[in-house]
Length: 263
Image 1 (tube, rainbow, N blue to C red):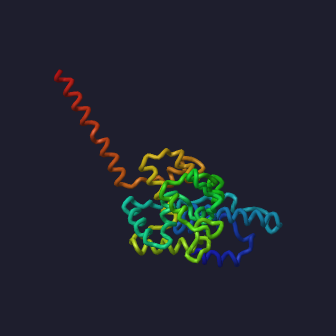
Image 2 (cartoon, rainbow, N blue to C red):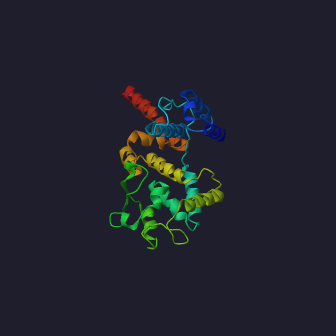
Image 3 (cartoon, rainbow, N blue to C red):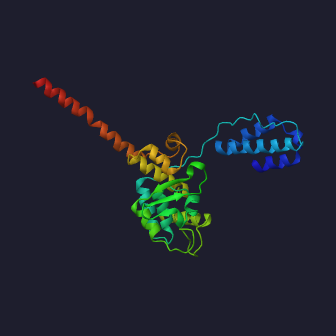
């Protein structure tokens, strides 16, 4: 579909493309792409037409009033606690498995792990400073639990970057992708990705009653609401455990009422 539309656009003059045409195109793409992708498309259209106006190629911007149609948002589900243990067990047997474990124990984005330098690590305080992230709020300090700290302490000082591949070079996107491909094959869990590590970290924190504001800071989010809406989906087993706690309360109340009646 997108290839067909691209070929059509290449044959049209700017003056031939109106708001109705662009809106129809977005509506068609809604069947295959998420809302976030459609929003990016609208941004590209707007930027392109604004540039064309500045360069006197057209007089108006037909993309300025486009609306985003309903589309399915891409859902990322966290690993269950059993799945996470399975992934960590497999990672312990992989030469670069410590990278997956580090992301599971810190909630770092893949790009943040790749850009982590020795100068960002405070051994005494047991924390890392994320200097380079995808967002402004991503610049932050992340405290390390003992397993994550031990992983850093066990790395060789080969270059400025903490994490390196088997060929002694800074870890790349390809290295991380091949790692989760190996873990998928080893565990049979096809949902394993770099982002799923981060999602699982957030979910485990919520299940362990972490303060939401603190979690938001650790993840590098702009606000608590975004953290909860995006990542904190406690697994069904945990929710059942929580409900079982409430189940006992009415029984205790009944016992108290009966004892008072006897007196």
